[in-house]
Length: 195
Image (tube, rainbow, N blue to C red):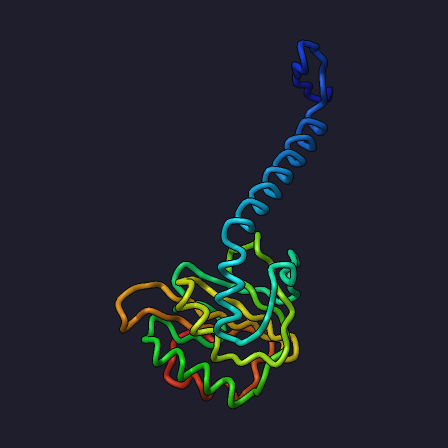
């Protein structure tokens, strides 16, 4: 079988390039376009997101503290958050989200890990210690977004999402991980989700 070739015009010159090289060139162009878009979004929104985290946590993180890296833990987010694995408090009032996160805070104490936002790859994650889990509600509320904390010391990922819906169902709280500490489960009694 002969390889497929594509005719490429570069500055008025014609030459043939095999399909694999064309695909490789397209992938590189897409990666460069993604990097440019991430840089643009980081410049436009990064400082604002970092200020929201600092305001809620009394930390002094800078934009340079946020690195594009993939934490070892992943977050599974189905179409309906109520169907997410782990511990789930879906579509609850801010007071319920705060109560849940304060309970988590009492059970596990200060956290060590990485903080960032769901689907904000341009920002990345910042390492942080002595982190109060309940501050995630204020971060989510001030940004109207999904804040994520990868608690490396516990092997769990925590998400607090703020939708901007009616006050009675504005937030969701999700904790996922292979070995969620038993003590945290009490904070989600009567909640939805699959454990």
